[in-house]
Image (cartoon, rainbow, N blue to C red; front, side, top):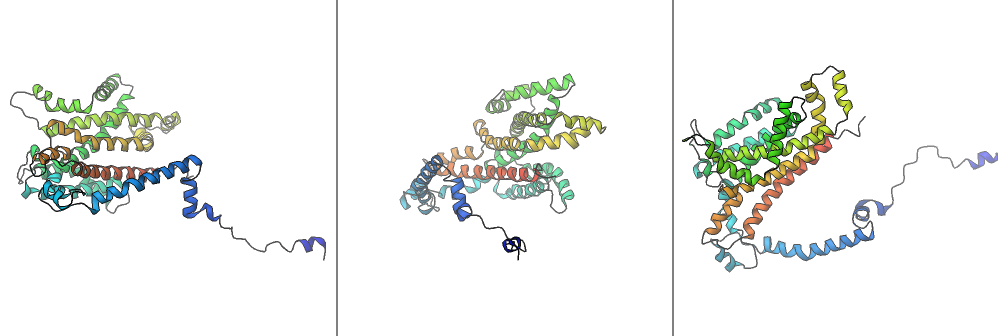
Length: 375
């Protein structure tokens, strides 16, 4: 046997399975080494954060959950039961007021149905793989009319005044309407600002700059007070409708700049490719430019939606009883005079959950539309 044959007996006759990675680079230990203790500074910050959590979280849980009082008729009674815990009894007693404001109790089934139909209307817009999506989109288009009829009444339903709409119902009316209307208006303004037609461009620029240059609270005061002076005598314009219009205009101006940034991020070659294919302006915008621009602008668009949803609380300054506005009459009642943290905490949790869901949907949409890794 030659030296070559003798030295070649170790050659494998098949594929050798890859060896597992080192144990300290995978699993929980690997994740901790990479994310928590990757350097001396990160290790120090991790220890500091853990110390802060251990020091503060248990007392918060004790106050908010373990020592909390959920059944009581007044703040005094809560303190007598357990002075060291939160008095969630006020939420339990005024829960429906937080949800509906002063909406008639016998008619509360109407906003309940409107909310369920809202979820149905949102599904085909947010997800493209739902069954019977085309039929559901017709419902989405008809939903504004259905919701208006259910909430405000008329045509067989008892009319309800806007002053009776409050709580989270008011927040949803203003927030959902503003979000749904500001996106298409923002797209139109963004395209108008980049238009070659001087009149359309001037109107778009003036609208955007004027609205962005004024605080929302000022616009709400204008809608509440000054607008009435420009209306003919005897003509009334619903207060809530005025607020919805101003909030929508405010959000649209910011939305226009976000979308304009997405359009500006596209290379000139996209426009040239559309021209080379013989597409008209509207065809190129609908099929090539806007789909890419909106994908780029997703984080900014959702950020505007979240800001708009939180800004609905500003309507309390013009005597509309959103969740923050509901707090004032509750605390004015002698049974609950002096309670603070529980009321604001409950509202904060609601807004956090709503904004967190919008944020997570943004992440889902970005991952779904991320095609940079595909060939």
